[in-house]
Image 1 (cartoon, helix red, strand yellow):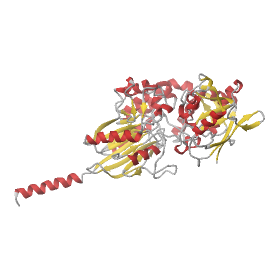
Image 2 (cartoon, helix red, strand yellow; image 1 turned 90 degrees about the horizontal axis):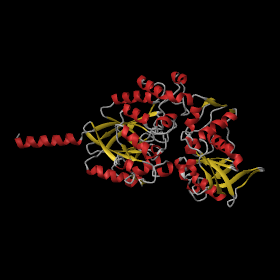
Image 3 (tube, one colour; image 1 turned 90 degrees about the vertical axis):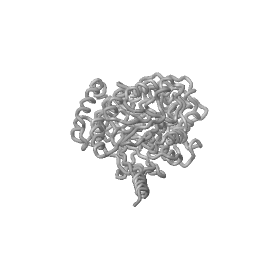
Image 4 (cartoon, one colour; image 1 turned 180 degrees about the vertical axis):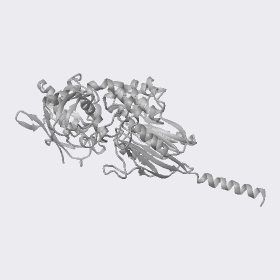
Length: 524
């Protein structure tokens, strides 16, 4: 055998080896944590120490620390990423803003995160403080931040990390309507997710990166659209819609992963109740040859890391006096699950709308409208603490009163049901009002009908030309969740009491509060 032939055979062997060199990666992921550092109940509300000891609680940072460490041991290559909305949702955020989230995420060793809309709840300043405190990149591709000095030189669209000798591109994605959902200010312009992602994919690919993961806080529907309308995206780690994807859980919305073409989409519900674990195999060309996994439930069988548990207890100490105060009682569980309240009348929506209207009914106000996105948890039966109330209403929104025409109210209701298919938070819970809606009608083209207003003699059809007094929260009155028609309302006052305090006081005077439905919202 000649030296030339040996050389040829050797080269072919090397080429064959390279061509079949698979690369495996475990993608660990969370989304929509919403400051749930402590364990939560099955209602996504607070869960006491006694119940936790009995194994009845879920989540909490201490369980996540253990689960992440165990998952890393099962993998030769792993990354840990987050799909946004670490901020907001409990007293921990109210008190610490992003500081405790940064501390816990650094402890867990995150490799990247996208900006969720709630990361803008307190403006760019708090987001920047969080970014300065974390040891990993925070990303957002579909926005122009060049005019926002606080973020202009800090917030990147994408980044490249290395694991096991391979480059992995991470791209951030944020809701295009974040300007309606939070408080990013006037200097940031949000753009189309598809074109933004494709632009970053093209740039990363040109730099030789062929394994690309989008960290998306845009919802399951948008993620499927991005997967279908872009090329080069391997995995989308989702958030925003709090979607449970699973192959075993009966409550799952879709399979884990959901494949759209060659793109694997995953999401792991919310509140730290699950840790997503996706195992992906790539060939040498960066193409996925296998993708499998399942969200791991963070239930009582997951041992809590003692050091983390002690740190969270230390951080909770200043909050205990506030949240442990019993302010009311409930005769039965009050349903506040987003999957219910964002598509139909729900008991928590009735309670909050009733409480707001009761507070201002002597001020010429007859209608209450509450956005379901402001309702963040259920409350179980028994004693109700201020901590539970604040978990339901964590945003520190204030009561707003104003006057608009009947037609404006109809327009507002149309907006409220315009995105029901996407289970968006603009769905209107009401008091002093009844309405019907029809999903078979196109959004914005007359889904709303039979709008009736409470009078001393019962309910009467709304008069489009008449003026009505309305109560909502300052977020909705300011145009949040698409309610822009309220921005020009007359006699607006946005500085009433905190809606959480209004709710607590209403429940307190109601005795043993009995949740109810009365047909005020009807789907045709």
